[in-house]
Image (cartoon, rainbow, N blue to C red; front, side, top):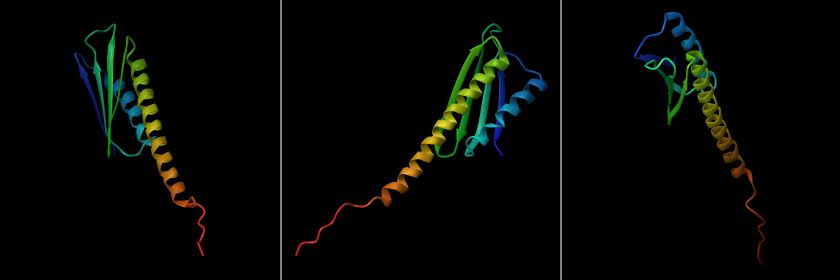
Amino acid sequence: MVKINISTRHGHISDETQEKISEKLEKLPRIYDHISAVELTLDLEHSEMLRVDLKVSSKHKPDFLASSMSDNLLGSIEQVVDKIEQQLRKYKGKLEDRHRSAGRRRQEPAGDFQEED
């Protein structure tokens, strides 16, 4: 189970909104299953320009970070979730490529060997 923490600065959000946000964040481990924690911070100080920061922590990897500023709270949340999903997919792809190419290197022939008489 992934630990999800949603915090707000300079205001609060309804339980319904918090539930919608949690549902979106709970889908992240489907992309990359080594996620240990998800932290979303909402800065509601300026209602015309809300700031959303998302930090995803995983095992054996530095944190994935994304932020967005907008006047639409749910739109900003969608943007940061999309950015994190892209980062997770890219990192997972690199890991898979690394594992695939490691197997190929071992199977390649070492070259032609000729014996001398």
